[in-house]
Each structure stands twice: as structure tokens, then as C-alpha cells.
Image (cartoon, rainbow, N blue to C red; front, side):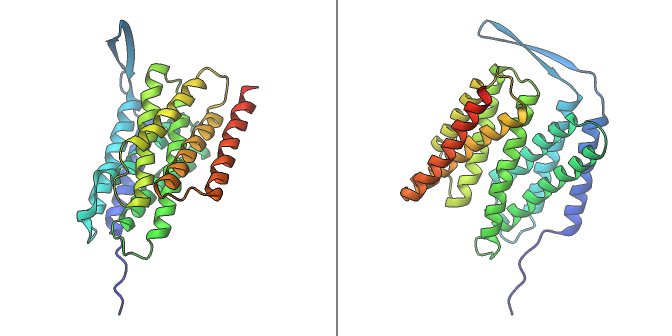
Length: 270
């Protein structure tokens, strides 16, 4: 008789869901006096404001990361868990939490609250499945997690644009976030660390494109879609190059994606 596939404890997931709902809700309604910080950098005085939204977003991300670590520890193959497996739940809490704070209170906000919680919990469940390479659900979980990773990246890029992040912070922010997501997606394919050069290349070029679009009068959703497509294009190209399978089909896929990116950029420039 076949043993059932391991599943995360429902009580633990329910408790984590409740904590996430509370944390997301507090980020909307809690208020703390803002704290201004000034940092001298290269002859410039850079001002940073730490407010209640910033604090609550970091706390929510901490809840997601610690909750993910706790759930993964209950897996029979918990020894295979790595810190990078906590990445997507934490980024999801950060990006969706910031997007929630921008929504007006109403039905849309409640729907966003449920979606944010579902994405964080869903990414944790998928990471749980992926701990065992012999699990028959691994192919589906890997594809689903890759899709969730790009969704999380898109929401995060939207937040960076909608918040009016200054260019001096935008470049490192987009570089690190994109490189982190690309690392996790490439790790799904190889099962081993993909190295730093590929994620850094995709992250750096995505940040350069974000800087080029920084002062254009473009809606944040359009910028987010364009940058996410560019990052996905980089992942597709790296996958084919690493697998030494860059044939005419791969060239056609990469060329089609590149054409879409160029067309979108040209259209948005009008």
C-alpha cells in the first residue's frame, strides 16, 4: 500500500493564516508617528521616512518567513530546506502588503486581503511539496511556484513604481528583488544553486530598464508588466543556455518575447 503524500499540518496553517490576516489588517489601520532619517551619501543628504506602513510591512514579512520555516520543519525531508525557500513567502507579504495599503477600503480591499493571504499560504504549501524530489506533485508544484514568483515580482515592481521611489533607491531595490526571484526560479530547474552571475545579470538589466522608464508618464501597472516580461525573458534565455538546448524553437520564443518587450516600450513611449 502506497504511503500518502505528506501534507502540512492544518492547525499550523490555520494559525498562520489568522496571523497574516491580522498583520495585513494592522498595516492598514495601525498608526505610528513617522521617523525621519537622514543619511549623507556621496555629498548628498538622503532623507528616509520610516512610518507605520514600513514597520507593519516588515513585521508581516517576518510572520510569513517564520511561518514558512515552521511549516517546512514538519516535513519528513525538512533537512533539505534552505533559507531561499523562505524567500517567496516573505516577498509576497512585502509586495502584497504594500499594494493593500494603497487600495481604498471597501470590497476591493477585502478581496485583496484574501488574495494576499492565499498567495503567501499557497507559496508555503508549494515549497513544502518541493522538499521531496520523489513527490509526484513536484512538476505541478514547480510550475505553480514559478508562476507565483513572477506574480509576486510584478506586484513588487508595481509597488516600487507607485510609491514614487527615488532613482537612487530604485536601482538597488529592483536589482535585488529581481535577482532573488530569478534565483529561486532557476533553482527549481536545476535543483542546485544557479550561481550569482545569471540572477545578477537579469536583475541589473531589469533595474536599468526601470531607470530608463522612471521619469516617463506611464501607469505603474504598465511598467510592472513590461519589467516582469523582461525578467521572464532573461529566465527563458538562461534556461536554454544552461541546458545547451538553444535551438530554433528557443530562439523563436526568446525573439517573440523580445519583440513584445520592444513593442510595449515603443507603445508606452508615445
